Image (cartoon, rainbow over all chains, first blue to last red; front, top):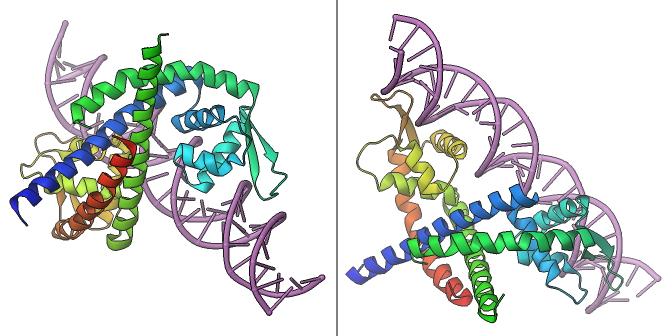
Length: 136
Length: 136
DNA sequence: CTTCATTAAATGCGTTGGCATTAGATGTCT
DNA sequence: AGACATCTAATGCCAACGCATTTAATGAAG
């Protein structure tokens, strides 16, 4: 292994540790603020944001998984939590009765609008501070 | 809110989503490969790496928490898992009998040495690919 | 039409994580 | 010395996740 390989490996590992640290710091701050001010977690917020930014009706169950970076099963349970909280509504998908629509309720939209400033505020405070510190 | 504020907000959110996507992709790849090839998870590996890179004896329980970005309780259980697997050993801390030392066993060191190439390999493959795609 | 591979979502199960609490040790202040 | 705030690690409890499986619907092939 050459000298530059060692240097490249160090740089790669350092970048990964920086990313881990940044992720942990920002995620933690978001979780804390979103939970205490609005009663939702980061995954819930990401799901609501995904739904709010989607005007075209589609079988969003799979898309929610992508938006929240969750497995299919975790997405199913996340949807259940959101539905129980009255923030979304499940609807049958007429063209393919295996799939479902997930729709924002008015309450869900209101909560999203209320939580968005908190979300942006935390990002503006924690993200630049953290990622400069770790060199992302 | 000015036009540039909107742009700055977009940029900030995009950076966060990029970081989330990169983290999810790399973490998932690491978890998969470390688990299948060596039977440990990402947190376990980070803990072993933290221990391997520490020659000076110290009450590492708290330091492990920092290395693995885990809470105190999660670190306690992580240590218990590693001890049960024979990878580390708990030892009393003579100068402060509240604290503990966590020491790598030979088996733990061997496993770390075996897993490190896998770890680096996955990083080299997944990290550049992902973070270029998302602009971290 | 029937059969079978495929796909979407839900669910059982085990693991991991955080919060709150507990137990024990330390150090300070009187 | 005794009382008390502080600190470390462990543990009870519960929430959230992933994997594997199940249920139901679809679509393609015989």
